[in-house]
Image (cartoon, rainbow, N blue to C red; front, side):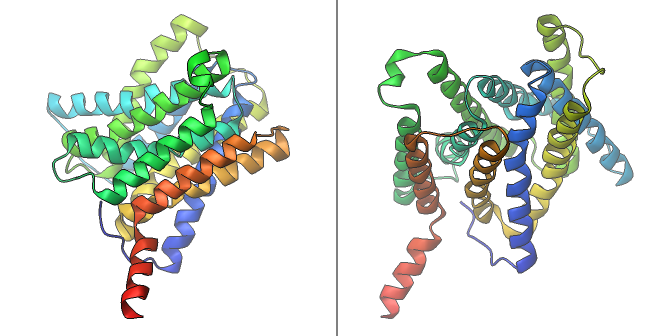
Length: 306
């Protein structure tokens, strides 16, 4: 994992802004799902976000990539980073609380570490990463419930669907490292979202019927937020933070998202989560902190200097 860079106040502000934006996306998706199907919600998400990012690519005069390998890369990235996780998590939100979805989503970084260790030669599973991964897995099992893993009721299936989405996100990180190296971030994001739209539109049309534009204002507001702000805008902000703060510091955004989603769900959707959800979140957070390593280094440095 990349060594953490020193973060300026501006970088910290942008990181917390990204956490607020992504945390709010779970709430906005829940609002949209009151009127549209979960597949249609994904069509809107990737379609409008793709249009915004295509416009950004045009404004910045980036050259369009050529060669079938790049477009295969876009398709694979679209499936792993958009189609599969967006679909699984949107369906999951029809069965479980938005705050719970956001907590399970926090395991993305845990699975990302494991996927990188399995498929990338330069990402070894060190002792801290191994301990962090075990803590993360324990957190996921605590949230779902050890007994529920054998019962497979609709609630446990929904939670496992969300976990499937986090695994897909993790594999997307590996795919991007291998297949999309050297592309400007805006081009990569626009390409994968466009490929996602091409896949999702016929799928949603076949299952839920043609997407309707005659929606309630609240639904359009929710779609506008999660598609334009929390997808297109968040991708641009994500890559900006990555450039100025490094991938290690971006792990911290994972700890902000659940707090925002849980608060919005409780305040506006009347959601309440069991104690096991918070216990699991604590284990996942502990795993992320161990993987991040800065607390351990600070304590070691203090002990050594003392």
